Image 1: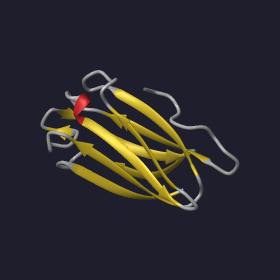
Image 2 (image 1 turned 90 degrees about the vertical axis):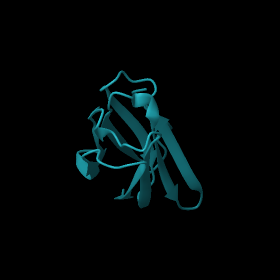
Image 3 (image 1 turned 45 degrees about the horizontal axis):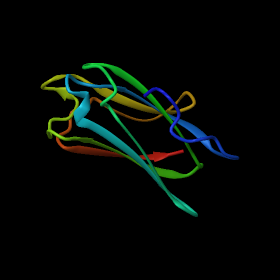
Image 4 (image 1 turned 30 degrees about the vertical axis):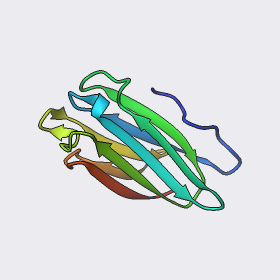
Length: 113
């Protein structure tokens, strides 16, 4: 689970999701979507993590805007009913977005890469 989801290309930038999951990591999935010359969508899931586990997920994106989406199949987010999950998204050392994990079925964040 802690590996790159695509390969670096000419001007691409490594975008890193650091996520702490709740007691039910298998309920959580995420997507990053970027529109440009082509629409690119990359996704991951928590099913390979341990309960309350940590995952690092890296995807290479072009400079520009993107959207991050996270979904919880049980509609209770990743904090606080069944653990204290949260996440942060970085490009290098620059924080692009973060969440305390309090959401119901889904949450989205706009990213500028």
